[in-house]
Structure formats: structure tokens, C-alpha cells
Image (cartoon, rainbow, N blue to C red; front, side, top):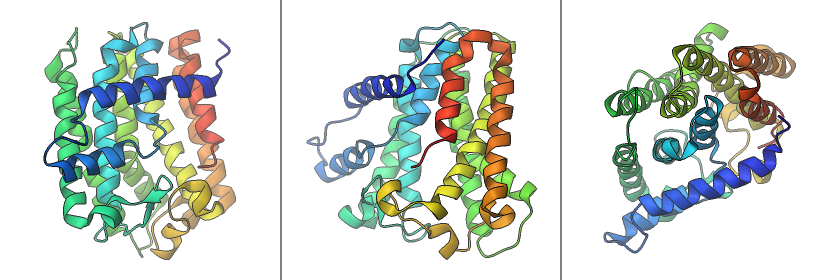
Length: 294
């Protein structure tokens, strides 16, 4: 399969944005300031990577991506909520996100916190639109809850904050990345595969692919923070260094980090072998993410 990945991403983003607008309250809905803030962050120009991976995984196991669309949108709501909270002064204290001022810089910290809270709640309301299948709605929604909670995404955020200014091992850093970034990426793929009625073998392959793709994605993020400008990234550059965050470049050097990203991507490709040619789009997405500049 020869995938035009840029065209694929553009089309998936169109489908996802259309669905998100249909699921979420309009910005004019009372309380207006809250729904304006939610809409501002959700439609501020994100790549829609996680929901795209969800739809692609559904297709890779032979399913109809329409079945996975509510789950894809739910994942994007969780992701956007996490970014809003991550940017707050008490967390990473960032002024820019997706090339625009962060939400708390426009609406204030209180509204930003509440908009994030509301998006997290909306995620589960949207996920409940999943029609169900052999894996069952409760199983699928439970997957999203675990990925969003105190043992995965939130756990990774806490561990990331605790590691600031400390010397940690690559093994410990990998554990942070598997939770903070990798958990939601892996779950996006798993949800899509489940919606596509994946076999147990295919679900294992998708899961392994997601783990290594999530690691590679975060390593590239660490590298880009050092090598790109705010204009290119759409968010503040050099923040990790200034905050003395634990990153792969800090532990391994820039070249070592680049090699780690390539190794993780190679492992992700190996995991797709069980899917044969059906995994071509996922493989193309992995190559695209390794080469990204923002």
C-alpha cells in the first residue's frame, strides 16, 4: 500500500473536526465563557494524531472507522484537557500552545481549569456513543478511564514534575514516558482496534506498536524542544532545559536521543508484522512522526 500520509492526515483531521463539532456544545451555549474556552483549545490547530491513530487502527484490523469515531473524539478531548492543565502556572507554566496563547493567558486560570475539567467529562459522554461490539462498551470505556487516570496519564505527569532537577536513569525516564505520553497513544490504538473487532493477536500487535510509537514520539518531542523555535513548534522552545526536566537529550545527548527514537520506531514497525499489509498506514504514520519538525 502506497499511502499519501499528508493527504490521509488532512482527510482524517477534517472528519474528526466535523465530528467534534457535532458532539461538543457550541461556543454560544451557556455558560458561554466556558464553552468558548473549550472550543478555543479544542480547535486551536492540533494535529489530531491520537484520534487519527484510533481510526487507522480500526481500519488496520479490517473494521469500519465510523465505529471508532466516537472513541477517537473522546481521546482528543482527554488529550486537549491534559494540555490545558499541563500549561498552567502550577505545572509547566507555558504561554504558547499550537501557535496561540495558552488558554489561561486568555481566559484566566480558573476558567482554564474548569474548561479542562469539562473536556474530560465530555470525553466519557462521547465515548458512551460507541455502539459496542464483541469487546463491550464497558470494556472500551474502562480502557479510556485507565489511560486517563492515576496509573497512566496523570501518574506520568506527576512523575515528570517530581523528576525536575533530579538525576534519573533512562529506565526511570522511559517509565515516565510510557505513562505521560505513551499510555494515551497506546490506548488510542487499542480503542480503534477494539472498535474494529480485532483478534487477540492483532490487538497484541497494535498494543506493542503503540508502546514503542509513544516512546519514539516523546523522544522526538524532547529533541524538538532543543532544536526548533517557538514559531516552528507552536509552543515555547527550550522549556525542558530551563525547567531541568528529565529528557532523553539530557540523559543521552542529542545524538543518543536521535538513535533512541530510531530504535523505538524500528521496534514499532516490527510489531506491525503480524498485521501484514493491513498495517501499512500505521507504518506510514510512524515514519511520518519520526521525521516531524513540530
